Image 1 (cartoon, helix red, strand yellow):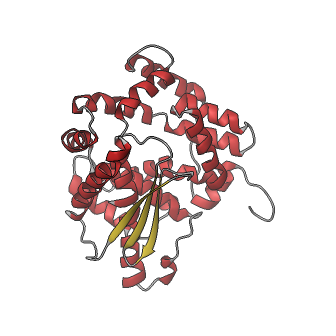
Image 2 (tube, one colour; image 1 turned 60 degrees about the vertical axis):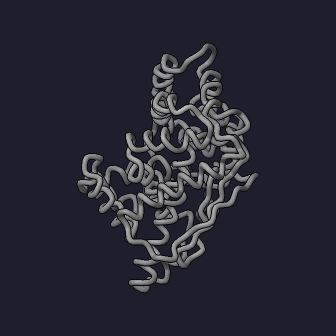
Length: 318
């Protein structure tokens, strides 16, 4: 990467994204698995029980667009209640296959995005709000719209009409997109909307929503295990198969999807830190400015300031 020298995962992350992810021992994740062992219904391995349980919450393919459009409409409504966006802002959703990612936002300029959703694998109900918020409102689409409006149009900073993917900007982009889901859909409000709107649209049982999300919250604590798998794999300490096995064990991917995820590692390398570490840093920054869950108006205000200005990871920690 630099004068022919291959950088370690941590060196690359620091130079590209201005941050180094924390290191975890897998014994830490093993302890989290034990708590899941008691929470999941059924018999067999944790992975098998989770796969069987989660299958009950898959969105039928014929209802996918209906559910996604409902999630997008609500995410847009909530965001526009707090932000004045350009009248012409909009995006188009396409459903695609054979991609190494689950969703992607292509910002076309003039407040317009193309958002693609990968349907290679079954899509679970929680992904509707996750992707609507992350890729759309108040995530990538809103981030790009506000940067274009504030920096390119208002200030004349034409360099911000180009977005270098492998740059410190990506930690802010991915971290804010992940955190933005929480901003738009605080936990209790999200569960209510899921139960009243999305679960019925998908033909799922709303009575199971709270139990499902309780387990999802436990599983989210295992997220950095995927970063450890990427670090070991990209540093040449484990093989692709071994990395996939770690993803199967700790992140509950099925084997095919785990191998797909290793292809994401190949293509995007240390970019993976931008999702979970980025989300943590953005949350800490917003809350330090008073934007806590107890003060949602302030949270929207601080979040907009972050989306509208140049930031990097080290700036969030000042």
